[in-house]
Amino acid sequence: SQQGEEDPQALSIQEGENATMNCSYKTSINNLQWYRQNSGRGLVHLILIRSNEREKHSGRLRVTLDTSKKSSSLLITASRAADTASYFCATVNNQGGKLIFGQGTELSVKP
Amino acid sequence: SAVISQKPSRDICQRGTSLTIQCQVDSQVTMMFWYRQQPGQSLTLIATANQGSEATYESGFVIDKFPISRPNLTFSTLTVSNLSPEDSSIYLCSIRTYEQYFGPGTRLTVT
Image (cartoon, rainbow over all chains, first blue to last red; front, side):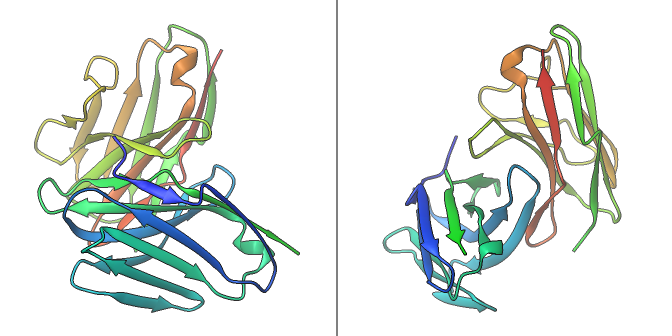
């Protein structure tokens, strides 16, 4: 079963713009992870944020976590055509430790 | 991060047959998982396969349909049995150290 929802389901922007994707989840979590998937290929791990962290950066990526609202956001700054992919959030809960995925956001960056 | 390989990378199988997917990791890991990604969908956890114990299946997945072996800390197999067109998906193995990583996937098409 899916943990939550991602918003928007699809996002189309121009190269150079920022892209923001949101993720909501339902249960208490240990951590939240973001992944990228290019065109039905394998998943690339982008970033992990722990439940006691509020913000994390990695290169052009910025992830925030609001445990009171059970939500997270992924910001990609200065997007490039190569950022075109599907982006998924996934959470590990405090009990079973299973990684459960959201529905994903399909990002299209136009050159 | 560990290197995860899967075999085969893709296959086309006839209805009623079975396909066994192999997952090899270049280091010893305790926790290994199998996921399914149906066309255009997010990832769904099939089962958790920890070495030395029986695989734990998620709701909607049964051992008769998806038998799993985990003979050691670097290897696992997933068999998809009695194939039907609805089994056409990408199947991914995954490991967890702290973050969770995924193999490149096996794309199965059932005709």
